[in-house]
Length: 468
Image (cartoon, rainbow, N blue to C red; front, side, top):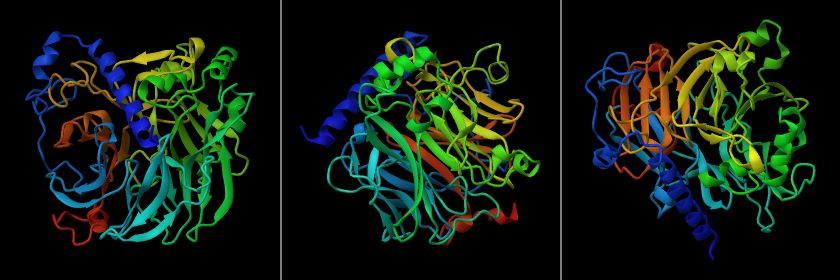
């Protein structure tokens, strides 16, 4: 069977399993009545989920979105740039993965083909008009004989720690690129089966590897697993993600990597927060960690356990299957805090490697990495989960995908991936803007809001962010 067909069949099975999981959790059979009514908007303020009004409190700009079609069918996956009214400004044909925009209107995205573990063959910089400005596909062949990038889930261009707007932290023209990738290895100290190991490496503009590489499997002893969890990983690596379409062997499933960047913790003497150090999040094992860039050691971590008698458990609660954990960049409100999309769903290594953590709603949390105090938390527990994407019957919940972004006016942009929705909230958790994909089968892998000054011509005429 063709590899792409096998991959799509596995994704279809995963969607069916997720559907059964969500249907079995519905609080009312009335969900069926609303299945096709995905544009219902609740006119009342309930749990912070209010009617949507485009108003003066929004941080106006453009959204660069990675659109994921159902089961990756056809060529409808693409990078879409829209304005605040949802009008299409530009489109690039890429493959689903984070898409990041640079000043001047170029984008960086996965291109080429997917191979059988959410890996892309190429990472490419495309101009506003879609011409190739930079391309890399020369790291690992995964036994195929053809080198590829094997990029998955994230990358960062030198000069900006997180891949979205941060004051005076600009992407360097022709800078190095940090890439999150996979490498299939056999390591019997971890599992009797081959594992799909997460690797972070760096490449320069000329396509030459800089020599920096970090391999997750070399640091398993620093990840906080119990003896029982190590046995579960040994028996069934990747078990927590199998029902979500992840491959067996995808043992911790790192889904984001960024630099810490300039921050007050390092400037006050805490060397763990050196600007060049890296922060990652693991979906399958539910941990967030900081990596020392020089030694590769994990030097700060929360999870994989959130016991009620621990400080992080008492203050943060249980984080399950997190995505896009990062330090809010210097110069933005809340800088130095960690912000993360806490997905919920299923995660953690339990009996025979199957999930040990379960929750049927998502959270966005911003917290102090020193004291673990939560500075902002957004959630909506009630509703009928995934069946409607807006309104009173919608529950804020996406067990996979998703990201968050701190905006220069203090608001937060949230991507609720499986609902195909992006929305903006104030520091008081008031939802003041949202957009849902017109095709109700589409998901959003990630989305970022970009400054008007990065978009050629600023066709909507928004105020420049440098004036905010």
